[in-house]
Image 1 (spheres, rainbow, N blue to C red):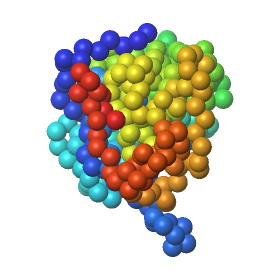
Image 2: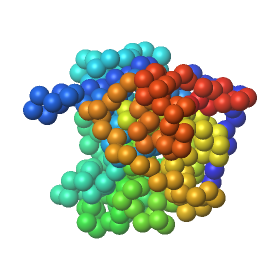
Image 3: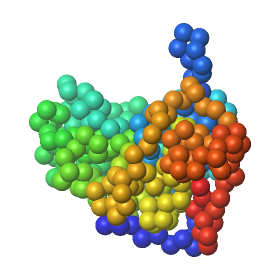
Image 4: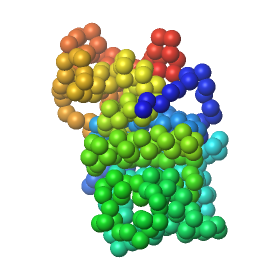
Amino acid sequence: MKPEVNPEVRPEPLLSANGLHVRFPGRRGGPEVRAVDGVDLTVTTGEIVALVGESGCGKSTLARALLGLVPATAGRIDFAGAPLATTARGLKSFRRRVQLVLQDPSGSLNPRHTVYDAVSEGLRIHRYDGDERAAVCRALSSAGLRPPERFLLRRPHELSGGQRQRVVIAGALALEPELIVADEPVASLDASVRGEILALLLRLRAELGLAALVVTHDLGLAWNIADRVAVMYLGRIVEYGTVEEVLTAPRHPYTQALLSVLPEAKTPAVVLGGEPPDPTRVGDGCRFHERCPLLAADPTMRASRCRQQALPILTGPGAACHWV
């Protein structure tokens, strides 16, 4: 079910990045990798933000940087109004409030551990001082594994793919976080199970006020679950706004191309030319210009500016929160 958003209500940012850069040394002395290249992004309390784009555009690196798992080269990350901690103790406290849900539940779960072991692991790491069994059962129940007692002693091979993903989500919920970062949370699941997991995330938002940053290449998923959408290309956010603004009236040619290949698209599919994005080769000007269908259709008018100048950020008509 589509989440309802009141555009006039803007709570304070829960997690935010400002001017964030993440760079890695090149292989064998080659050019450095500009994986994240000046990103501004916010997630507010109780909000679901979808971060979308092709493989290799920097989505997962950005998500891990926001969690403190990858060091930022430059920029600022704030959580609950304070800078992201850099000490081991501070990061441990932060990660109790922000949890990561990975793409492949089979890879996230130790095949030798029971469901109880998997869900209680975070509680033990953070030295939970309450009733551990009760906390595990609450988390399993919140993740839709009911009655939870039926699952405590099962191992991953005894569960379906959807149940394994629910166990991973329960492990995140056990610590009662304020935000989860879900990296392609349903990519490995069947279509029917995908719908169940997406419905679960919406229910957790409604019941617990849980915020989420969902990393995905699937614009259909973003439409069904997100309040806002950030479209990423070659390390940078190229379009940002509410899901209705971005997915029904896309303004950036990259967003338009992504939407054109969906089964329900009403416009002809746009086949992007040029080479896939290469984070070791980021020039001046618009980083999309080598594949841009607008430039291909009218090369003389736009060539100089697109290739040489940093383009201004444009806001949507009557929607200052929609920019490209």
